[in-house]
Image (cartoon, rainbow, N blue to C red):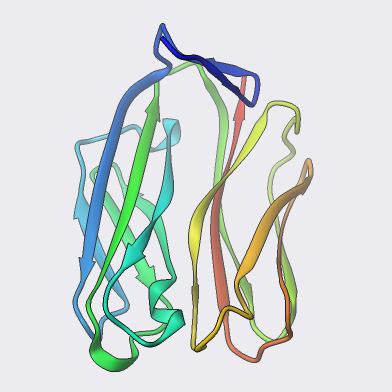
Length: 181
């Protein structure tokens, strides 16, 4: 069994995961969101990770997507731009941890309009036991990656998203901060 350490938790045997569910969401051309049904999870013990998107489009922005767990049995994917009427497929994975591993779970989004950065305030976490899970991002319109953002857990109460060039269109970054025991 291969083991690795993430946020003070050693993954391997015995498993910390109650379930791991991979999925995809097809968003028809012209739409900005779509959903997928998953097997029921305890949302407070679960995180989602964006695994990328594909589709035929000349628009960079349409390839950017954000995913979130919207109920115990549903995942929603969002696009920021639907130009050209192109269909997109977005992949994700949902990890459900057994009870007793997660102390707190704090999902959120940061919207940057005309600014190059944005912050989101969370309840205080111990940063040596917390992991920031990226769940993708959307952008309103762009043919290039100049408003592609990065996200970081800045301190115990702040998540920060930063993008390069000042751009007048919205970029929305999704994340979940999980603090482990």
